[in-house]
Length: 289
Image (cartoon, rainbow, N blue to C red):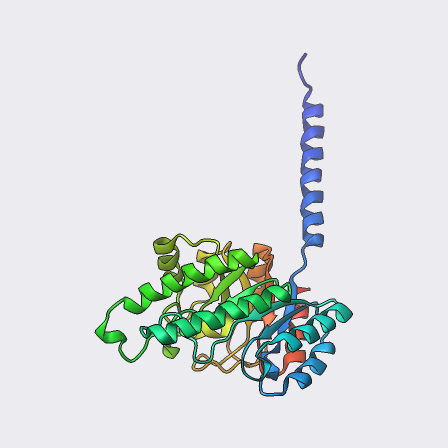
């Protein structure tokens, strides 16, 4: 029996309508997860940070395991209590002061690895969504030993990845500008890292302030749409890492947020501004609306 042209047309219309309805449902369901890093309070005592944390109008919070906010058993208990009361979900930024996973000095390297593993343990006890790690750094003797720091960084990341697996913890490496000695500053650096190590389970934390200094925001998003799992958002004028509020520098935020919506980015966009944090939160919500 032949199918009439009218029945074919009706079927095409029904399929098109179903496809459109599905797209609309997905669009309505998509909601960007916006959080706030407590970096803006790092100069303040831990208890003062806790008070500001309790007043945050967000579900996602990143705590910094360094400086006045270095984690310990008492502070973990306090953070877990606040999370219970306010429904926060944490990520943890690892220590970065005097930490170098590419150090050519074995005693200094071993101290860095021990401290980072301790931070992982703390992140696990906070049920952290993610543990954020800085890449290795060049040192004063790097020119004398070409590529040694790169190889040491990769070996350290293998060790840290193994530790993360024992904790059931997701980890991701943040891009850091070359002007600060970083070994992983561009999307090509990350491509080389993945190619040489095969550690594709380690994600990327795209720091927009850092990437802006290297003109790397678009290369990262274009090259690694599936491996950028977390964003640190702050603005700058393109010269130094100023951690300005959203819209107070030269980053094209409309372009960036439009691309993230098009990508249906499923990670957390974490405000890491030191200035104008509440204004940045309001601005992002407006851009993602």
